[in-house]
Image 1 (tube, rainbow, N blue to C red):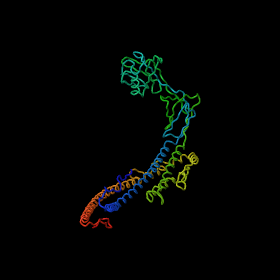
Image 2 (image 1 turned 90 degrees about the horizontal axis):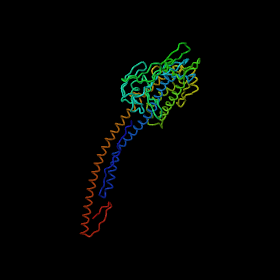
Image 3 (image 1 turned 180 degrees about the horizontal axis):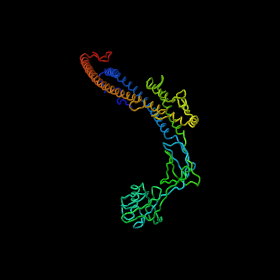
Image 4 (image 1 turned 30 degrees about the horizontal axis):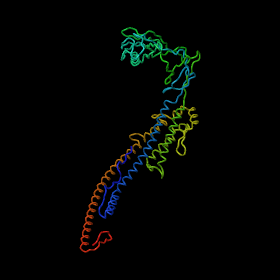
Length: 467
């Protein structure tokens, strides 16, 4: 954060209004003394401006290198989670989700039955419920719910049907989903409690309290059934989301046509890595441009700073990375550094190389902690961007300290100049007052002389009346 001076660098005179004829000359003397006395203050301000410029330049460099560091982290994330893609031969029957831990492969799924959920509807209330916000089943607030193979005591805030639904969904949401359904007409509604099991299967649903059973109609559900990779055994599930393999799950959406299983294919996908590399290249080029602005005779405030050379070395290390051989380099995958220091990503070259040697690409990438480009980039950028020991942060801290010290010196010098100005102004004012008194005396004596002699006054070259 920039630290800058909060008070002016010059001190204005509190004001001198002389009364003698020499007042203009005395004012000039005072102004010249103030000007000379303020020279050290101006020098301190010039140094402060230099520090401020360096700080602003450092913050700009810090921003682009922090963005570059983030792009490397994003590349590492893509290498872990965005390197596989899935396809489904019939999207109306299945959808697939690939997560970390998945491996390339092909799977066959025959969906025989989507399964269904057990449902139930409550009995009518003590009187027909036309307003579920105030009316309930039988005036009770305590119920016993049986569903999903378990029993739960449910306590509603009030006896209203609305509050019963809220209580069931809050206290037994893992077993059933409660809602309100109108089994009457629009003009003469008859609101009931509707319950649906949270899992597929035939487990019954029951709701009761001290008044007895409160369910009027119940329907048992069924488990989903399917076959995997042509195996004759029929598998069942209480959920329509199935785990086919580590990191690979599918969701059942429909029933397969008999004898036509759906094929789920998981394969390598370099597109996510290419996108991450493009973001890295953009961040890299911005960092390179920021350094160029600080180099040479017309460079910025950091021209000649050893930090700029250090950061340039970091970029060169990243842009020319090769993990021991040419086929384990960025260039082998169409990621090249030109003569101006800019990185570009050739999509065609990247796709061809990645598809031909995906494992080679992953080996070149490595991870932030186990070799390859990601470890080299992570380590190099941590050296300059670590919030405590990083070279950029350390130099920013040093300049902040210098700015704070300079502001203190400026404040002290301003106070000294103010005291000097007040003292000089008082002395000049005293001198002017003394001169004014002498001028008054001369005028008085000259007048007396003229009265006795009848002589006319004349003025000397200095403007004072003479005898």
